[in-house]
Length: 331
Image (tube, helix red, strand yellow):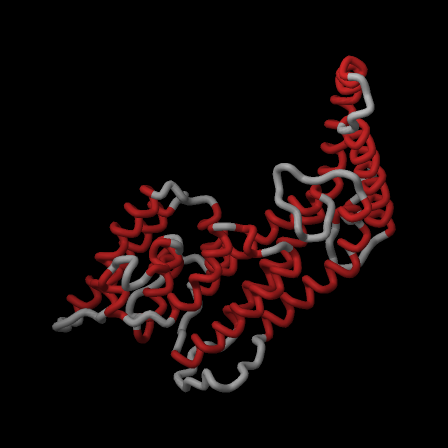
C-alpha cells in the first residue's frame, strides 16, 4: 500500500498513488469476495469446509483491515471538504423578510459547491472502486442499496450521517434569519436531501433521516407552538438534539439580544463547532445558560421592563429537552 501524502489526499482529483491504491483495494475486495463465495458453497463437505475456514479466517480479516486503511483516510478527508462547503452557509444572507414560497428559490452558493463536490467525488473517485454488482459478497452489517460494495457502502453510510449532523448543527446556528431566509433554507434542505440520497439511500438511515426531515417544519414553528413544549404541538422537539433547538431559538432573538455561547467564550463559529464535536448536550446547555444569565443581566442594567419573548421559551425548554433526550438514550 502506498503511504505517501498524496495516496489519501482527496483533493477531488486522482493522484497516481490514489489510482494504484484503488486497484489494490479492488484486488483485496475481489479476493475477499471470492473466498467468501467458496465458504458459502454447499458442495464442500462440512469437515473440509471447517478446515478451509480455519486456514483463511485470519488472512481474510487482514485483507479487510488493509482495505480499510486504504479507504478510511480518503473518506475522512473528503468529509472535511464537505464540512467546509457547508460551513460557508454562514457567508450567505438569510436575513430577508419577504416570503415568496410560491416562486422557485435560487440555490445558495454553499449548496452549489457542496453538490459539485459530491458529483466530482462520485465520478472521479468512487467510480474507481469495484461495485457490488461485480462481486459475490453481500453486506450483513450495512444495508447496501447504494450500488457499491459493502466495504465502500459502510463508509458512505458513515459519511452521510456525519454530513446530516453537521448540516443540522450549522443551519441552526445561522444568524440573522428572517422569514424569507427560512424559505431559502428550506430549498437548500431539499437539495441536500436529494444530494445525500445519491450517495446513500436516506430512508435506510433511520433516526438520522428523520433528523434531517424534521428541520424544515421546525424552522416554521411559531413561538406559541414551541412554548407548549410538547410533541403534539411540535413533533420535531422529540427528534432534534436539544442544542440544535436552543441554538436556533437564540438565533431568532431580535438584534442579537441573546448571544450564542461562542460569542461569550470568545470563539468563532468554527472553533465552537469543533468544541461541540467533543462535548455533551448537558455541557452545551451549561454554556447556553451562561448566555441567558448574561442577557438577563443586560436587561436589568438597562432597567428594561420585559424580556424578549423567546427568552422564557428557551429557559423552560432547555431542561425539558435534556430530560427527554436522556430518556430516549439518543446521546
